[in-house]
Image (cartoon, rainbow, N blue to C red; front, side):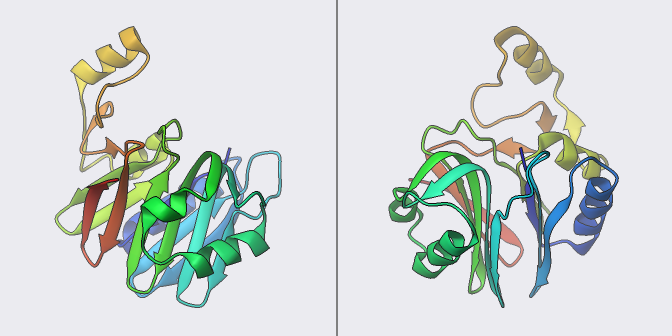
Length: 193
């Protein structure tokens, strides 16, 4: 298991970096690019390369994602070069259980596999946004801006899930498998595929 987080807020980025450095996870990627801050971790027991960084653009993939039947940094480079902003077409070249973040030009794109088993969470408030793959880490760094949703906690305990795109925290939502996010400047847009 590895994690990624992308935000437009330097303070959130710093808090997440500190939190990860104090955990069992090792940072694999840490980048600031034109006001976009991104980090990812290695898997716990594998020193994997789950990102490719190309000057002002990057791609980060967590989980088990296979792009055009291959894995590794060279293949992520190929994926980044081939991405043209069409998430639906691009996602058709992936297999597995994964989350992907792509920064290309001035926009960031986020998606998971079509069935949505791999969790990608998002927060956006007052021009500040954070997108990542660990609800607990996000909740910790956002604790002053979110609240616990007691009904959703109960639903999680009874059904082992929270229906729709909600989570146990008001303010943090879960991306569905038929959706993707485009982040640009201080806004995020959740789009249906």
